[in-house]
Image (cartoon, rainbow, N blue to C red; front, side, top):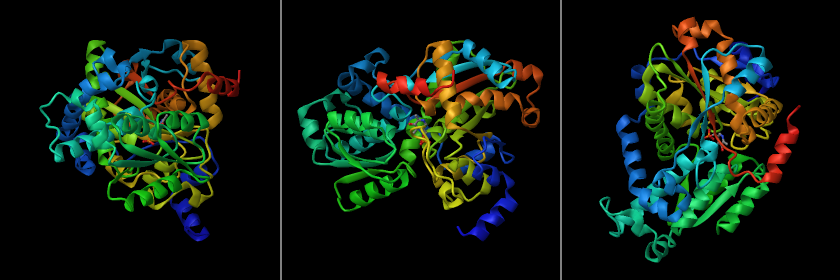
Length: 443
Ligand SMILES: *Cc1c(COP(=O)(O)O)cnc(C)c1O
């Protein structure tokens, strides 16, 4: 984009100037529609999500054997929902804003195998690919007990194939660990911001880690290029993959069951707000899609991004989607929030979800650190910075009567609301790294 284009863009969308000024902004989407109207734009259906759930069920006996930590949940990779009343009180004080309703935390931070939301989509896509190869080779049928995959015969079979992915860290962890366990030869192309401990952990699992001095976009492009030259190599495309998206979407139906068991009501008079940290968009987009299928128009999904990487807000607000990157505006895409340092949003997710999202907002890195410190202090829960991005959401929603009004959410309804903050990572952060995060929080 040249200077003139940017000037025109700012005239048309004054919010863009505030993004360029690195302000913390909140934008509620005026183009939100009902599920029925919005669904066709996604191009995927309830059936596709049901198929993904069934595939994960088939793999459950294998996962039980390959990752004993999944035995408690019978090989299903799922996380807890916990109430955070002390944090809710602390946030009301911090923001000087009453938060009507009740706050909960979805602890994807503590998902088994890779300790982040990527244990949903990333692992699902690797399993999908493995299943396809094994079925095509006549070694597996969908009626088999998939624990047979935990054998030298299958490991040897998969070792003829390779998998590649570009990542800022967490996706690489999920795909690397899962692929290596099945027997694949796997390369993770890591951007400059990826943490040393993640690279170390992957190498310990036998993953080939390729390091770049550039950001996520370059790591992905290089991974894609390497895969193109090798017919036995499968590239997992974080920017465009519908398979990843479906792996995330399974969370919706699962949450509905959890809420039913916990007697958490969601309906017209009991709205559900879900706050999701957003990087390229696949994780929060897929989860939001699954939530919409599960709860219909009673769930309101809001994405959170760092002030230095507001790619999805920029793409959806301007309608330019993946035709614009934050760097085009001089925004540096440098943030401590792993997984969120993405300059250009997924074109697929932005276009699929723009009508089903209620809004997006940004917050500073220091805000994420402060929230990290606060949550650790008042609830004893430790997360990585990106996982706190959603924590600022309930106060933003409650501070905007106009937005609530536009969705017919009156005082009574907001008092009955459930606010679910999606904690996307942090369960595997080493102690000394966590100490650094905690030290960055202002007392
Ligand atoms: C990847 C990631 C996200 C966002 O997911 P995207 O699919 O990139 O939008 C959020 N939080 C954490 C901790 C992540 O690793």
